[in-house]
Length: 196
Length: 148
Image (cartoon, rainbow over all chains, first blue to last red; front, side, top):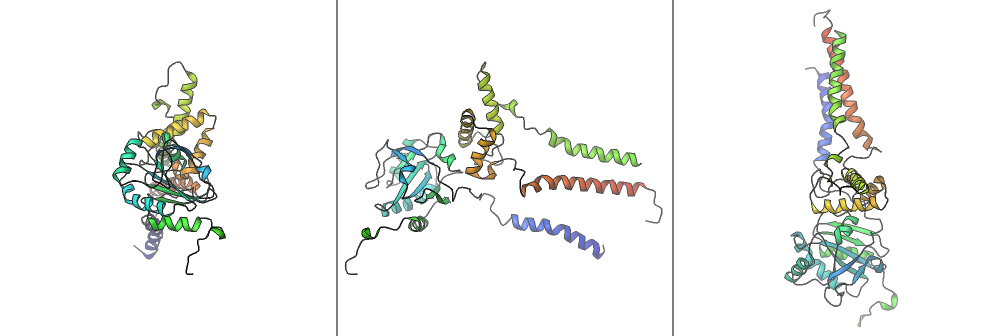
């Protein structure tokens, strides 16, 4: 073994090692979505879980994404068989209630599940403040490039997908996106606090 | 001697090429039987199978939506069928899924940009290896003139 051979072997091994070093630091399950920045796929779907006042919609009503232009829309895909959905349930429900009356709308989309199971789940979780719709033959899910549940999409007031969240979402992430995307309130509607 | 090494190289090349040539796009043999006597339905089923075989099932490991029994794959297959029935071309249907899931959804990467390397590199590697074998066989089979 002379130094030339050693150098050649090192040279040959270097790119392979570099490739491994790169590959093993990446999460193979994390696949970049082409959707953020693009117009959110339109959908209309029937409400099966009404939600609670003041955010409630009547069961059977059709929720259309197109009708919600000008608002930040949070589209959350969930299922009663999804364990991780339990972790985010309170954050979603509470944040939605907190943003009632502001230009924000939360929509739950039931994924691969029966409405009856979904309703039972909502009841067992202590209610859901915002309405949920059914997704016939997973059309909405496929349109949104869904891999699994939970996944949450934040649609900006112009109808573009601003952010896609895989896995349980937290209140701080929701608030960050809604606050940064919501249109600034008109001057005359800004609440004036007494004593200021 | 030279002829023999050439034949050997040829055989190696054939052995390497055959498996890839034999792995066919044609999976229509596994397509579910369409309603008998309805040629249009059978044709749509064939085209659906052809497109579905090229799309990756998002909730599986390296399986196409044609092969996967999962609910999502079934729904996606149904959507492929519907889009083809509506007159979309196979390429348009694939483009729809790429727009939603990214290039990842294609089981075979497109031959554009950096992806070309995926196709060219293995072939270059095999050709280089073959050249090496031929050179070495030649070298070994020529009677040594010196004291190697």
